[in-house]
Length: 292
Image (tube, rainbow, N blue to C red; front, top):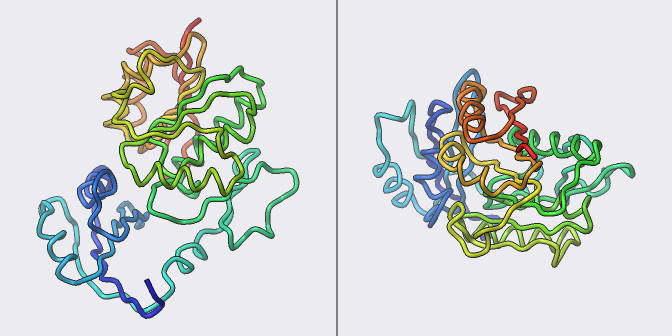
């Protein structure tokens, strides 16, 4: 892709409760005909889903395949010629969350000496640490580390770019860490990010649909990161709790504030003690603990 390339953007405004479903339909989870799919906050209470295509016909085909009743607005435009990778990365400032510092390669000179650094450039997989969901997970994990909570076996379920698995690899040198995602692209990005962050060989990354994988069969984890969405989280509640070791922790995220009570009640019913954490940018993360 050269600097002269001008992608066609399908821009969709939708309510937060269905924006991620639209993104999934455009290919965020599964085979993706788009060059990229990105979700942005759109104040006051909306979200913008933008997918990029090589041709106007591809963008129009994607738009026609969606349920028009779910869209507030939907339009197609050709974007100006830019270096889109650099443009996207430059728009992501570094973030400090607890003991962690998430940055792009363009901000390598800004890493504090007292932080655990996580290099994550913008890419195809969801999760750069700049969103309230991933940041919420890192905040809880940082607190668990401060409390010296035993965490020897860790699962990053729906790993996206692998940032949570890498955070564990950089702070728990003896832990066994597994990262799974339904999207093969996410696994490729996780593996590439592991190399960039010098934790090669520390993370077992594999494609898996929920817990339907030999890699997870019969295993128990001291900590499970589950940064997905409220609906899938509740659908996986029994499996997540079953895979949590006695006394283990579950960090749940991807939950809009309005859905937090429902997700909390679901996981309490499945056997966890659940503590909501302060909201970040309209998203709530939950800490669940399984009884010994």
